[in-house]
Image (tube, rainbow, N blue to C red; front, side, top):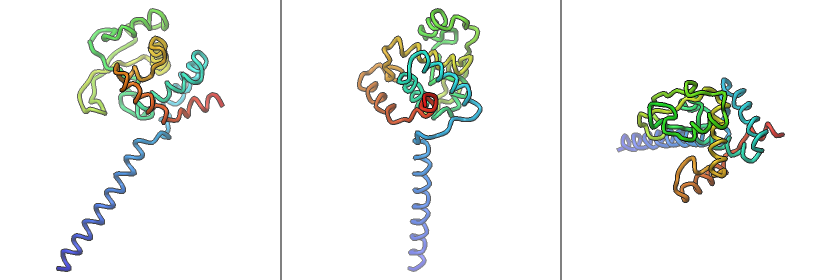
Length: 188
């Protein structure tokens, strides 16, 4: 009988150890204080400085929060490969069924051409599905595109996530919980 108690006690201790480790990994993934990878930090600072200069501190904070949420604080493979806050390609030709991308290079980024953009295919982190995403020529170009789109959408950050007002509101509330550490550093 003692043998079963030892087995049960050992199993319970293993369960607690695993449970504690799972919670710490989960809290790390949900942390709003993750650092930006060194290889991208200069470009992210450059992009956000330009956003602050053009659109102001509050809008730049919103963009940083979106990037942090959409790219796992600039660490996702999707960000590393495409520099965007998650732009799925819905066609194999530019503008990939994003009319705003065509408008962006015509109205805003006139130094860019369709040949500066490409696509890549990978397994999406959230769903595990194989999807094709848009690759921007640079991090500042991707940030400027997001500002361009949000300006057209009256700075409704949730519109990037959904067309449903209740989903947009939840997304906007989630963004408020994320610290825009880079913009705070830029403006301090």
